[in-house]
Length: 124
Image (spheres, rainbow, N blue to C red):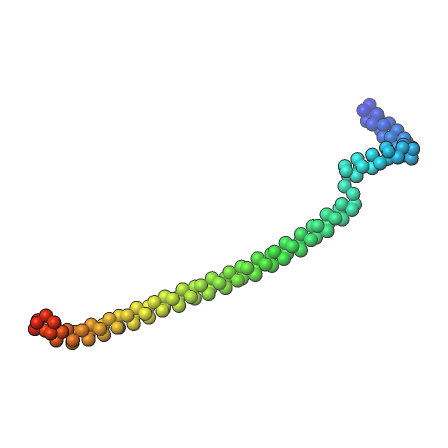
């Protein structure tokens, strides 16, 4: 019984609505405002589609920028590793030079120390 009442009401609305829309412009404007705020229009979908397309372009650009950043980071990491290795090699070489100079100074001191001890402290 409820379904038949709904069908009767639908039929009544479909018969009366065109008449009301022609006779009452305020009703027509109010109905249009309610429907336009309630339902999504084709223009809304078009606008949304454009926004989604634009966001897709932005996401693609961001993905490319991220790839470039990752590549640059890898290159920077390799450079840093090469610099660290070069620093280690330099430290090793400077340490070797330091030892060589130290040994040479000890050799010179060994030969020069006895005369200096005798001269300054009277030690033979």
